[in-house]
Image 1 (cartoon, rainbow, N blue to C red):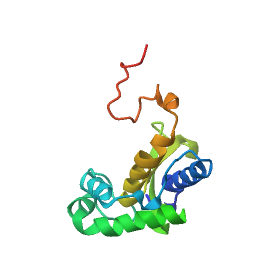
Image 2: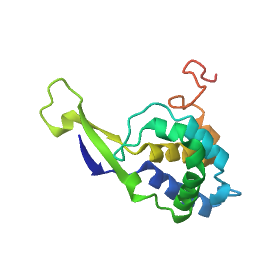
Image 3: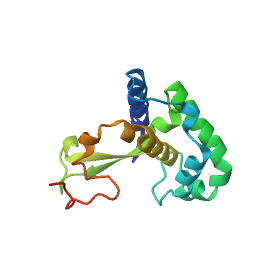
Image 4: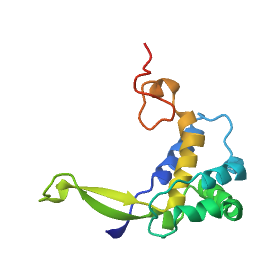
Length: 157
């Protein structure tokens, strides 16, 4: 394993959100619309997962949620208003995982990047709150992977 700078999904989301706002796809969009109760629920529902390069474990966010919520809410609002996530969120621990039994080339390896847990939680919040509602419903009609409460055998028609 080694540390490297990795592109952050949240940075791309912020760009999409800002461009969607400038195109008028959102009727009302306020960066301060990230509420403390949403952040608290996000923190307390964090699941067991690998820590990123900051080495902060999932239980830190879960059990210290009451104390961390105001600070993290402020950080999320600043990130959205500036359009730039903190530099620490752009770092990842990258582990090469073989695609084949005996890898011979770099193309035989798949990179698994583990970003800080907080950046992953913020990405989830941004995607749920801003990105998914902005996508056309028709586009998501046949999307079943990575969507809660959608089964592959519940296709329409």
